[in-house]
Image (cartoon, rainbow, N blue to C red; front, top):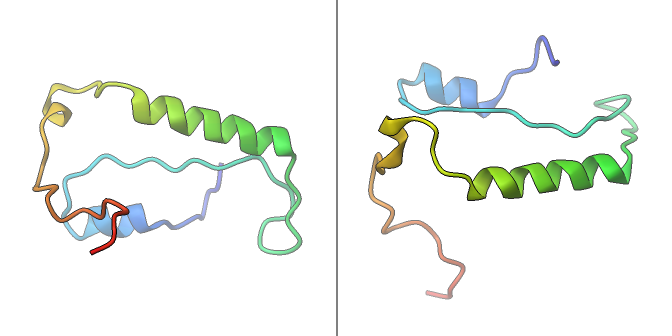
Length: 78
């Protein structure tokens, strides 16, 4: 969709991280200027993300953690 788009995911892969990545975007008009988007498009993207986060891994190797999660932020103060 975005032929020349460069993301942080590409940089992470080039740095040697063994991760799966994806880019999601809402439908829009006139990117990098006065952007116009329909509310239905934003809501559809939000629903897609919620369902994706609730789904189980598709690949066996992704079922186990690749690193510790102890230091991830929890939203709780200090």
